Amino acid sequence: MTRIFSGVKPTGHLTLGNYLGALRRWAEEDQYRAESLFCVVDLHALTVEHDPARVRRLSRQAASLMLAAGLDPQVCTVFVQSHVDEHARLSYLLECVASDGEMRRMIQYKEKSARAQASGQGVRLSLLTYPVLMAADILAYGADEVPVGEDQTQHVELTRDLAERFNQRYGGAFVIPRATQPAVAARVMDLQDPASKMGKSHEATAGIVYLLDEPDVVAKKVMRAVTDSEPGVTYDREARPGLANLLEILASCTGKEPAALAAAYDAGGLGFGALKRETADAVVELLRPLRARHAELSADPGYMDGVLREGAARARAIARPTVDAAYRAMGLLPPA
Image (cartoon, rainbow, N blue to C red; front, side, top):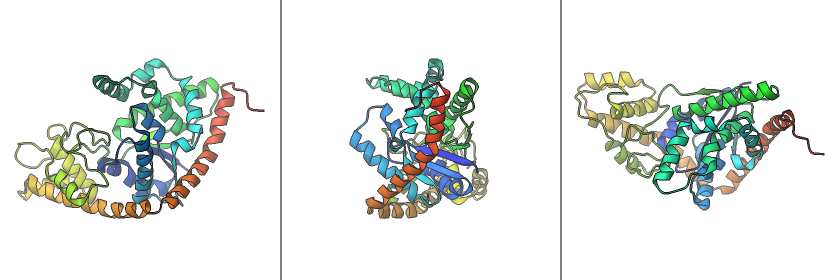
């Protein structure tokens, strides 16, 4: 059976982009068509300045939202990365296969290190090496597919390169994974800055719809979305990014095509206001059951603890033989 691995980083409150770009497909498709593991990748949250209590809180919240989105722990494996030691064990081996140049070419490293330096913070070594940890996350489970957003495909390509290099040098320990993306809304953009993705850790939040935002807050953010001054409604990501973002969000909520929605609005003489109202209503209704389920899960922390404990045990049982084999392949002496 095909095996899928993907994860979410607890560096901020999860957004509409996280849901449309990842969580919904995990819940509606991926967990049923393959052996699936979905992880809160909390170790990745330590690559920048952080509040330990906030990381713990957001890790639990992310796990709850994954279940609220529809992941069924009886069908798939839901766990926290730091609960399974094999991630860190394998990461070091892969650091011994990766090169410094590869790490410094990673686009996210360039962007995040520049932001850290601009704010007067130091750049942690883990920010440079975290793509290797991401590779370990994937390779430890023999994943065939990695559902990711467009901004993470470079990291999956690095994972493929490291796996192939390891296999050539030390023997065929790893499955070579591939990245997969949804057809629509793979990358939901900030409503106020459609050139940037809707990121959960951005300082400016006016254009970010969080999954736990109240309905009136969601509607207000969508209604204030940046568009442009051109007449008519057309779907053009390059020339009209703000408008295209709204059309893609509405398409993801309704199951329609962005271009078809644009044509219908244009033919009907409907303006941006109508598009924003319909998009706001669609997003509010999309998130309503998720928010209700999250409230139920938050009221029962013992249940969440059990889900994460059992998920980590299943994940560990899958990962350990692969990582142990990689240790032997690289020449490390097994424990007596």
